[in-house]
Length: 133
Length: 133
Length: 133
Length: 133
Image 1: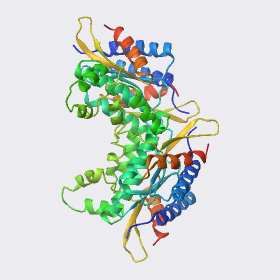
Image 2: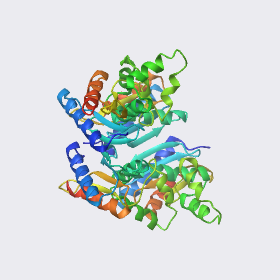
Image 3: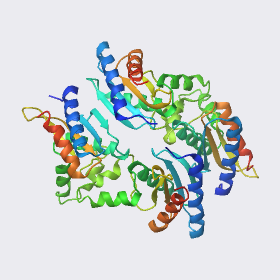
Image 4: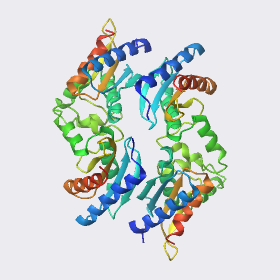
């Protein structure tokens, strides 16, 4: 299964609502389980975080774990693993990219938020994920 | 003036509605007047046209004319203008990218559709533009 | 509001004058608030720093903070944020990129200098910024 | 010999003056004999022609002939030469890129204009070239 546009929009809007509640200007991207963009919103964020939001979502989708966990994995490898961030046209392994799962727990995509603190972006992304799981 | 997320969403949703009426699977991108992504939807399109939609919208925004008119300009130059499509990380000069104007006629962004025939994509993009002009 | 060519030139020339006073060979770039180049000068710098000057200015403009502050943000995240430098076709987060503001304090672009020490480049960029704020 | 910043600015300003006389919004780039940017001005042009101006100048400098002559050469090769426009990160072989020569006729750089008709851009570029030859 892969995410539908309908569910992607549901996740996007829940994330937008959370960003509104936190009152911070972010960009939010939803990708499917192949890392391809499906839904996107820039909410008065600076331009630079458009790409951050997309890269966080893509990082989560393509490795099947939230973006900050992927960061822990790379850092914890005790090997010269940092070059991994150059792969796939650039990973972004800070908090704010969350995998999206269907009701049965299968990963169907990911949502990425950028523009707040890592903690705020994570809260926004998780609000998006919660809306469809 | 630059486009707001509210207006971008209005244009996007009008374009989505038109795509639904035509019953074709497309990707639709809205960018601001500097070519930066602000709103996006992939509606069961093939993956390859995600980038087409973005590039059509960017082409329209960065030159201030619909994407197919930019194509006419390049082809009509009767000179060796074809290298222009390599500029700006790649232009896309087929129909389906339409400038977005505010009530006073000033260009505030662009919408790009891809996945249908050039005529269908143009109809979808123009439906988006009509919703906010 | 976005920066005019007249103001961009004023900022560029003030930065050039400072570089002359410091007697160092630099490249200096001015971009608008969307990160698009508007004015540029290479003053006997090595070739490699042409792109550094542009990327510093773009980094400042696209995030709305001086390039070194963006570097502090990335480094200070205490998280795996280093992949951010791969976004937007490559950020450059060393000192020497300064936001340009209008009289009311609104960001209208940025200036980037490269070729000196980080401190010298910062001094040059800030001289450019001071000329129009 | 390679162009100095002083001469590059002289060429740029002569081109700017011509663009003002023609009353058209263009971008103008000056590169040295290696194709590296040395001086640049965006005069209310659309964003898309920033890269056109740079690519025209680079095309002229790197082949030692005006950009439209390079177009004639590629088209006249009676061979499958069109892929040449993909080389060097993208050539642009329409009129508007003119080589810059010193008093002795040696090529020291090039100037590119974009935003007008090919004829206007050529007139602007040649005005720049005339100022220092």
